[in-house]
Length: 637
Image (cartoon, rainbow, N blue to C red; front, top):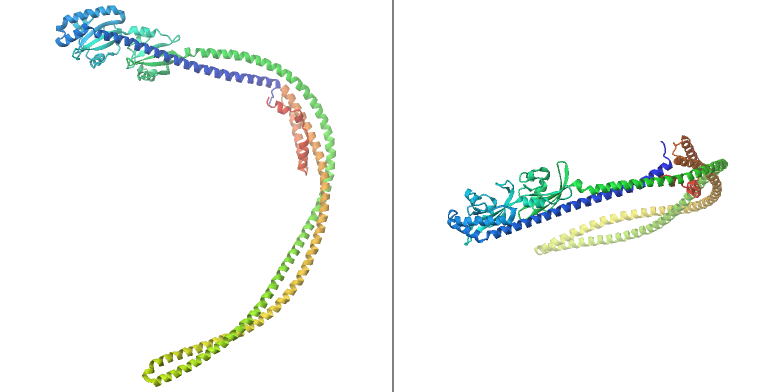
């Protein structure tokens, strides 16, 4: 894999450092400006819609005031009263006078109206400024929405419609007429040309392509720059703007976006409260965002210029940086060669010393191991002897205790024997008492027989006493036999206990002699163990000295090997530095050399016994990459 040069990396890094902030700042600036322009455009469109809605309310408010002022004229009230009471045919004089009045007012008001008229309570036109043309035609207005609303007593503005006379859009302001008694007598109507209002509204321009429009309560277009739309196109039926028209007809004020015939537009809308209509103002979205596009183009131009300057500065910086690095890498390569040669000689000598020390240490270690084994066996014998001594002491105590117990048992047996003799005497006394009682019972029976019937009861008692005496004598005899057998057995037990006591005395004497012998064995084993322990300590000290010598030799060899490996690695770093600066392909020889050095260091480390000391030596070393940290400084390029 081909490695890029340091100059290339510096230039690339510099460009990215400059380019990323430019892109991020430009993106967020243009995005923020676009959002601000969009919000401003929407807010402006909504405000224009509100202003036009207010103007429309003011326009129709003035027309309603004029219509109301004409509706209360004496001629209008008198004619309406006469028609209501006598009918139109009988009120022609008043109606013709009213025709003349309407014509005069029409001339004074200018071209804002198409005509004025009055209709009776049945909705039939009875007077107009056209000389009674509508009256002669008996034009009926009963079904018109404005007539029905006026009949309910409401002054209102009717739905826009096309004039039957001129074909142009018109709107009628209807004012209810009442008799002196307050009854509905008809309406006064002012037919207004909608073009008057349309010209005022469509004169307003939003940008180059934006325009206002107005819809009635049903969504029908009544004002639009395109005349062919007026009273012909219902915007609610157009799918792209249906949701917006529904919002407008619901009386809401707001903004929205839509796409119609491939053009994206922004619309602001507001309600016309006096009529229930709604007015909207739209603007082309691309026109609205033209400023944002210009800002984006300017940002690209400025960013490109700044990027070109940055590239020039980075090129100059890279050239001044790379040349000193090349000179430093050549000097490092020469120093690494010298360090490699010296470390190889030190490594060879240290390795020979380490091998001899290792063999000596192995011999002492085997001797130490044998002494430790002998010491272990001696300690075990001493411990067993000590344990046997303790067991003999415990056995002696048990025998002594048993001897005392046997003596107490002999005394107890003697007490039992004496108690049995005393009990035997008591039994004999009981037997004698039973015999005497029996004799007394016989005498009592004889005396009762002599007494005849008077002594019959006493004879029965005497007989029972005699029976009890016989039973007591039998029990006393049996008890005496049992006690005699017990006394015999107690005597035999006493003889056995005496024999056992003699045996225990002999065992106690033997245990004492054995305990003395075991104590002497224990003392001798302890002295032998102490002597072996001292010999083992001396051998351990010798082993430590030899191990220390071997470790020192190994550390010297390890340090030399490590120095050699680091020198080779330093040469590899120098090669990589040259490749980094020049951007050449990585050499296979460098890879092989680095791999061989790693294998050499691995073998040296596996041969060393004292890894902790080796780590301590390595910790104190000063590595080349700590003095000149090439990898840390340039690994990111």
